[in-house]
Length: 185
Image 1 (cartoon, rainbow, N blue to C red):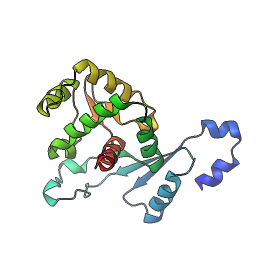
Image 2 (image 1 turned 180 degrees about the vertical axis):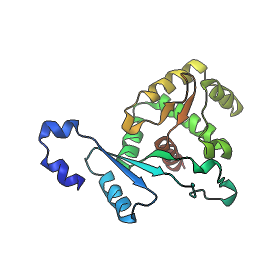
Image 3 (image 1 turned 90 degrees about the horizontal axis):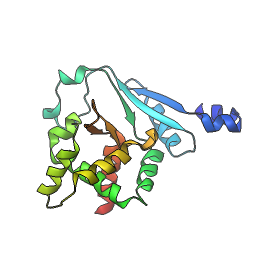
Image 4 (image 1 turned 60 degrees about the horizontal axis):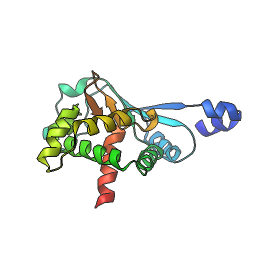
């Protein structure tokens, strides 16, 4: 359906076009396969996962908290094209990649941080880098975090969180971080 609609648009309309697809827990599995297939195509598609029920996606039963998981949620679902674009964006930005890797390591150090999508300050990353035997200056971290939050919204890995000094890793950021770790091994 999206492909047909996109091909019927004039060229100047295709350049301004953006599709947003919402998938809920009640969406038939075929739609998920369809969105995955579109993920590698040139169509400008963003996919969101919506939930109004309890989040039962936790891998460990002890991680499931029925009280905290009853809140409705809408989360951007990373598509292959967005993951690849983000990884390619790091090709010429080695220092930004290093700082993003530090953010991912900080995030994954604690299971509680990961499960609750904790926010962080650049000062948290300075302390964390020192604990790992790496000495990153706060000005360097701040500079690269500011670059990361200005990336295009289709492949943004870090976003501001409730203030100008707190940040949060996005679901795409968690996926890209995981892919980076796989490539390093």
